[in-house]
Every structure is written in structure tokens, then in C-alpha cells.
Length: 198
Image 1 (cartoon, rainbow, N blue to C red):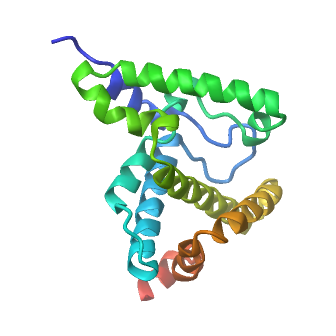
Image 2 (tube, rainbow, N blue to C red):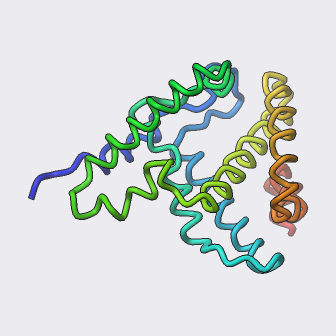
């Protein structure tokens, strides 16, 4: 059987820095980010199902989230403002990302590719799961920006404002986001002693 470099690429995710163009008090890599997005997506799916009559699979949401940045194993993290600076640039970045996703998919043994196509290639991800993972992605970045601001790192002030606006748009159709914040946000910024008391 031919050997596959797929896992080797995934294992390089901790080497890929996020927020590379910004000063950050706490460094973050793509592996950490993907894990956080997976946990948040899982929680959002559970909240939707339990409180709002949803039927989405939390396990599927978490798995889609784990792989949502797979293109960055080839391309590294691309700054949001750079990527969305103008529509032409965005289209080209999206094409390059899709090429990288397909390249990652093709590193898998052929028998596994059908299972992974709807996880790795973003245009093949079920729209409902794609939306919940995008919301989780925004929440993860928002919490990161809030954390950086708690250390007086004003580099993230515009980031938090932009993400808040984007999350407000999502919340209109996804009430689980508001409930998520009311359940979890406040405790994300307490010290370990306070956390231990709860």
C-alpha cells in the first residue's frame, strides 16, 4: 500500500501561527484554533438541539471544525483584512484555498477520499454544518480578541468590533449563539482561582 503524507501535514498545524501580522500577548497556532472551534461548534450544536429543537449532529459539527483550516497546512494563515480587501482578491484566495483542500484530500488513500471530501473541501461541506462551524470560528476569534484586550493589547480592538458585527448578523438566525455567550463567555476571562471556585 502506498504511504500517505496526509497525517504528516495535519501534524504540522501547530507550526502555523495565527494573527501573524499582529502583536499578540498570547501566541496561537492553527492546531489550537481548530481544537477550540471544534469544541465551540460541538457546544453550539448541542445548544441548538436541546434548546431550539435542532437535529444537527454535534459530532459531525466538531469533525467538520477540526478540518476547517486544512488549506492552511499548505498556505499558512492569511490575514482576514488582506483576504477580504477587495472582491477580486477574495475570489483568488478562495480558488487557492480550494486547490490546497483538494491537494490535501488527494494525499489520502483513494478508498478514504469519499469520506473526507465533505470534511476537507469547503464547497462540499453541508451548508448547515458550514454555517455552524463559521459561527464557532467567529466566536473563537472574538474570545481571542477579548482576551488580548484584557491584557491592554489594543491591536485587537478593531478586530473585536468587526467580529461583534459579524456575530450579530449570525445571531439573528442562530439563537444558540446568544445562549452560548450567556452560558460561557464571562467565565472565559476569570483567573484560575476564581475558576476553581465555580
